[in-house]
Length: 140
Image (tube, rainbow, N blue to C red):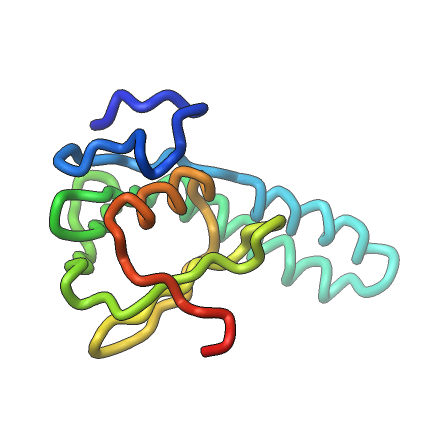
């Protein structure tokens, strides 16, 4: 795995040939858990549903691993590769929203994908920029 320090998240500082594993980020599941607590005063069923979704995202963040390799974005559960996305098939990508990253979007030739931000969003953006993958334009 890459020896990149957390502060070194610019595209120019990322080596192209190394495998970079994104560390998990629990901001989104924690935020949803906090919102579910607020929902307790309003609607118990909504609070329970949001808390369950938060627990699911926490489990996903703890068990999934995203690795940027020289040729593809690989997704692992533990040591098992569950999906490979070759860069050559990517048409564009984006991270929504810039100041509060919650959703990672990318489009391949065959399909498009939306993933919740369960990994370091700054390093995710830096890796995508380092691979020089086409970014989605705001007007598309």
